[in-house]
Image (cartoon, rainbow, N blue to C red; front, side, top):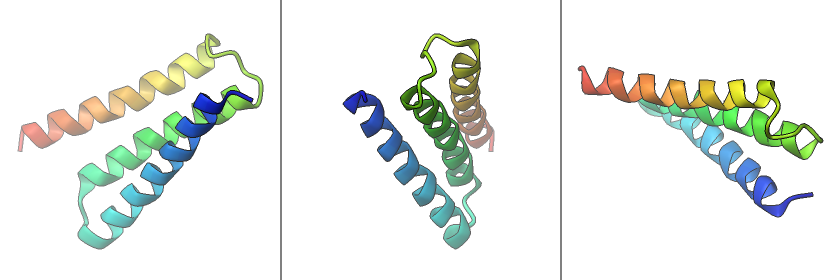
Length: 80
């Protein structure tokens, strides 16, 4: 078990939970988008810990989607 991937998973889950809590309390959509992105990152880290190669196309797509969600959220916030 790779400790770096495990640590990334733990931090991603913490950010996911905090993002959901902030959204529920403050109705900040940006926090929800960040939570969704880190939820995707958490899925990719979990899959890697369960044996998927980090170069598998599914892992790459999940991570790319996470980054695209963050990019979308930042552009959306910028355009307000």
